[in-house]
Amino acid sequence: MNFLPHITHTPRYRCSAINDTIVDENCPSLANAGSLQYTELIQRMTHVCRYDRLERPIEYDSTSRRLPIVVKTRIYVYLLQNLNSDLLQFKTHALLQLSFQDKRLAYRDFAPERRETIVGQKHLSERLWLPHIFFANERESSILGTDEKDVLTSISRDGNVIISTRLQASLYCWMNFKKFPFDQQYCSTILESWMYNTSDLLLEWEAHSPISFDPDMRLTEFNLVQFWHNTTVVHSDNINMRHGAFEGNYSSLSFTVSLQREIGFYLLDYYLPSMMIVAISWVSFWLQADASPPRIMLGTSTMLSFITLSSSQSKTLPKVSYIKVSEVWFIGCTFFIFGSLVEFAFVNTIWRRKENIELKKVNSKYIIKSTLTPRPSRRQLGGSLSNESRARSCSSLDNIVSSTESVRNGNGTVNPGFNNYLTVHPNLPIIRTECADNVSVCSERSTNDHVINIDKDQKSEKDPPTFTTMTPQEIAMWIDRRSRLLFPGMFLAFNALYWTFVYCF
Image (cartoon, rainbow, N blue to C red; front, top):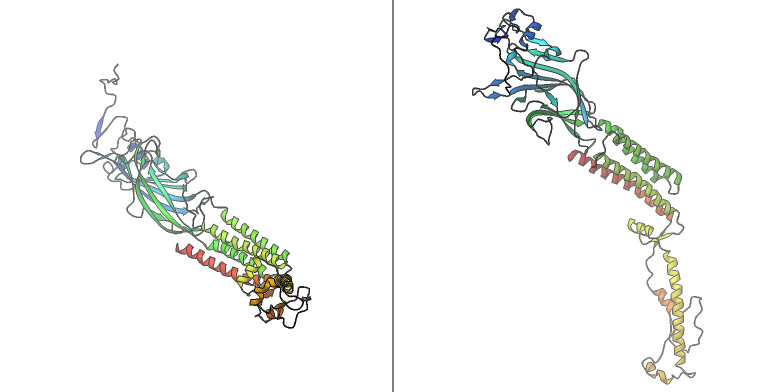
């Protein structure tokens, strides 16, 4: 079968040459282009016989190699709204300007007397070929305007086309909240070519002021520190389908803004109130240890107030897996408020004890040790041991006396069985002591007996060191007085470490 189209010998169109351009009889002439109106001139230049809006402008180099069209880009930012931390996005209103060279629209040759630039709106751009550019990190976007969209199109006599579009867009921005609320975020706007790869189209920033901002633009929560732009190439394949079913390398432009969060709001509404709440929890140290209702009410109310204050600040943030700086502050303040409650429970328990506590020295070491490991009174413990030991000594000494008397006869002679012992000890001493019931040994001794009084010898020994006695109430008040200095000192140290980390790391 022959799939060649049928060719007739009679020409369907009669062609003529005007300014080296071949046109047919249905193709409008450009001979009198200088006297035409702009609308009619555009209609004739973009007629299907001369212009195909589906085909990009084509240029060749000296070696007849097809060159990609270069699209210059410029962005003017009208408004940059605050970042939405929960949705990880930000909104912007900007003017996107694209310029490229299309020699098919140059009217210098057939209308040399026209020096003005042809300017139109959206209806003019609909008759032209336009590069398809999209926001790669776009959530949603739209062209500003109501009935007539805010699209401005201009065509110079050399064929330079400029498309200016006022648009609004919600763009994705990945944020790092590790140092919230002292964080600095970097949000990018990424432009990419959709249909044409790098062999057909190249995106470039304008050489002069490619990115500019409205001088009256203000941000409430952030401060614009700096911005920069970049030019890259994005690869697309069957796996990374960034451009649908098309494969290849695509030109990409991006510009990034650095936004520093303003901390004035958080200092006045979070940090200073939380410091005051922690300080209020220390008022319980000036209340008496047995004042349970006011101290419990003070501790619980400060804890609940601080939790409510912290939850109001963190509810606008996403739930991330890492620890934020604000959470470190929350944990630290919670520790101090909870510590004041634990301190009250500790001193209240000590206050309700009934027995006094004896201390070797009045210092922190012995007070805390005796408080944590309470023992019976040393005086009571010593008295019970003395009576027991004395009773034990009395009974043992009675055995000794009875043994001594058993070795003597009535006339003072010694039994033969103890001859060796008495030879070494001719005069066996007789020991006299008082038992626990203050009754002495009831045996008559001879005048030659040596009597040793143990009680007198014990009294002559050096007295043991004395112990200081403190009541449980005195110990509870002592702990409260120390807490009045310990808790503020630890909180100041915590603040020094916290703010050093925030501003130095």
